[in-house]
Amino acid sequence: MIFKIRTKILVGMLIIGVVAALPITFISMDSLIRSSKDQAKDFGEKSAYYNSEIINTWLSEKAKILMELKLQLKDIGSDEEVIKLLRMYSGISQDFISIFIGTDDNRMLDAYGWIPDESYNVSERPWFQKAVNKDKYVTTSAYRDVNKQENVIAVASGIDLQEYKGVIAANIYVDYILEIINDIKYGENGFAILLDDTYNIITGPKDAEKLAVFNYIFEASGRKAQGFDKSEAYEIEIDGIDYIAAYSSIEGFDWSLFLVAPLSDFITSAYIMQKQMIQISLGILVIIFMIDYILSSTISSPIETLVNWVSRIAKGDFDTAINIKTQDEIGKLSKELDKMRINLKTIFESLKYESNIISMNSQNLAEHLDETYQGTSRFMSMLSHDIKTPVTLIKGYSKALSMDMVDRDKTKDYIERIQYRSEQIENIVADILDNTYEANDIKVNLKEIKIIDYINMILYNTENYVINQKHQLLEMIDYGGIDLQGIIAIDITKIHRVINNILSNAVKFSKDDTVIELIIKEEDGRVLTCIKDYGIGIKAEEQEKIFNMFYKSDDSKKGYGLGLYINKSIIEAHQGEIFFESVHQQGTISGYYLPIKKIINA
Image 1 (cartoon, rainbow, N blue to C red):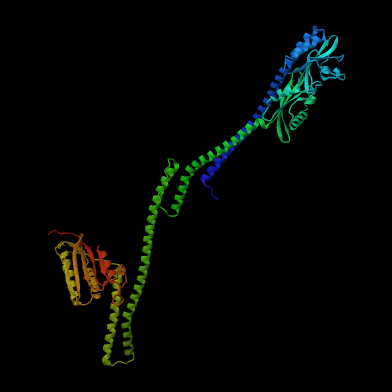
Image 2 (image 1 turned 30 degrees about the vertical axis):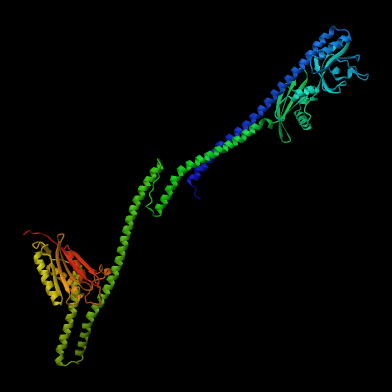
């Protein structure tokens, strides 16, 4: 499996982003929650202390009033004056239900004149038991007021009245204190509980579930046995719910204030921030992914384009230009690759061209070899036929002579016939050997002659040949366009042979009494000599083959296919060039160019 560079970059950047973002996010969230918990506990401890001070102040005000009254009562002797003074001080604070004095002789002096029944025992009342013989003020637990039949607490202090031990006390409705407790806010679902010196609840929530939570926390904390410090806060779990509990003692009154709230009240905002941080982290990852995608595309797209172009080049597509317009190493690489593409295209086109040339040459060579083979076969067949006929006659004559079947008068005739046929075979073999040797090893004996002499020589030879072959000769000699005094170097004998071979073909392949033209003119410093006939011509597909050894375009005609091959060899030995044009069924122009060596100005 091959992974693209873009994929690798994306995965790598995402891994880096995740590795960088997630730990920071989780550490930040953990720190945030821890900080929120610490803040909740710190707030709880401070809140408990602050509210306990409020309660302390409130009780101190009540105790101060009571202690001032106590001082006033030292100089008063009658019960009426005492009751009058009690009533006056009861009106000072609206929180007082009543101020009263109970003595150890079971007397009860109430500010508003309440007189208990005979069953009422002063010494058994909680305020008397706690404050008797106490110079300082104390507070009581909640108890049931006999007169008002309400739950109350009392601020009390010991007093000596008319030689009796007693207690002066002011009772206060618990509901008044409950109002103070209910005003304490600790979280959205928190609550406050006020405990006395025996850790009994003075006031608190009426919700049984909240009371159960408090009792569990109180019992689990072990504070009942250890006692309370001045203030403290701690975390505790109940049934999978975390709570913050904070308390503070109310100094001077032996009471304690307890605050309890679910931890979630304080860390909800932290959880909200946690979710926001997660969302921000995911958003950052998305942004990183988008930026990474854009950057990876910027980096990988040119590389992918290069890969595609290289793949095209590998498949032989050299026409598509490589053009990546980036100002970096990839852009520079694309330019160099495009140069390589152009060079490879040139090389491959050259190789393709040369391959085609080789293929064509190979095909032509194969065709040439095949034609040579066929021409050789025809040549051997004709040679065999030409030799076989005289050989057969010689055998016949010889057999007749050996068997004395011939009269003496005819013996001489038979011997002469044998000699004739032998000479015929000898001439055939000699002619073939001479032509083959001459074709393969052309040597010319050049002689410089004037062009006018050359024209006269060709014209004389052509006239005799054409007239003897029953054809008409038309002279097309450009005397005005040729420098007749110019010099050409030729082997006269071989040039005669060339022109005779051309004339032989012209006569052979045209009808009797038709016109044969002799054309001589000068072109580009060379003399062109041509013979034109109006015979059967040569097919276009055969014209390139007629100069091959042993090739014949018409098997019905005589010859061994060596004439034009020898002509070409002779002309090339003269540094000349063969000229040939033919149209099938219209005629043929066959000739040659010879270079002019010197030009003599007359």
